[in-house]
Image 1 (cartoon, rainbow, N blue to C red):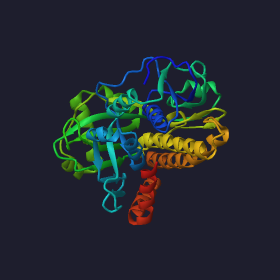
Image 2 (image 1 turned 45 degrees about the vertical axis):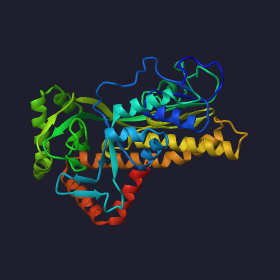
Image 3 (image 1 turned 30 degrees about the vertical axis):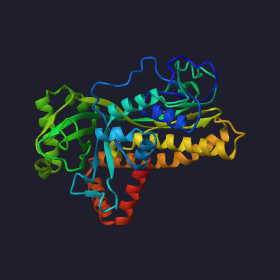
Image 4 (image 1 turned 180 degrees about the vertical axis):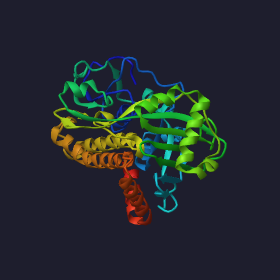
Length: 390
């Protein structure tokens, strides 16, 4: 990969510096497309600790395997064999890889390791050239297609006049790494607590088979309180939350202690009103944003990458007269991605709204519904299928 500006024309200019942008540049290069990577001027592959974790589904892992990133990332990941979900009034739902005839339900991966490995792979990718960032929505080099992977605050999306209908939840995501005194055994745990959602994701750093990634969705004021606590007080608050939700879980996970700083960020639901236009396309958080309770954000972004590359490859083989930025080709991508993304966003938003309401009648309804889903095998299989497919 060249680190200087390209003088020639590119098939695709990829704008963005995150995992989705890097995966797209790699995947396009592997298919023989010339790529201009317009990354941020301050871009640097992460080397310091990153408290974020990603839940990767089967489709995401298949893409990363194709890009030759997964074998190295696997050492920075932990498998999820079981998922245990608890409501706030006796509701319970469990998913098992064994029951679904799967090796694992997902893998929990280190976010910093994923981005570092993608960056390293791009150093050796043919047909990828680094170019300056976009200015006012214009690519710095001539290209057939501008792929916008700039995240939820995309300036290029705004310059194109694309509406990004954003609904702030008033909740923030609180994340940290935890050590546990007992092995996690590949079990992910989630508690819907009205109004917050607490998840412990099995992880292997810093202690192999005895660590968790914490993702805790709480009202904004509570997030500020949690971040201001000392490590000992934060740990006590976490123990209290688990004990209130499922007392026996404390014995199952053991003592939990902070192994990182505590990070937080605002949560929202958003969807672009247009995903494509003449010579441009949106992917990842630039096109959609949702609550992290289902852990599908990056999976959906990588599914965008997989779909777009597939659509462009098929068009090149079957309709070679069309350029990569042909609107008809790009509409095929949008049709394939908009429905699964909207349906997942609707599902996660509905679950959050249902469990955030503290009124008694709704508490009974949502917990009864959770128990019914637990008893209906086909519905559970359908939910797993949606999650695995992105």
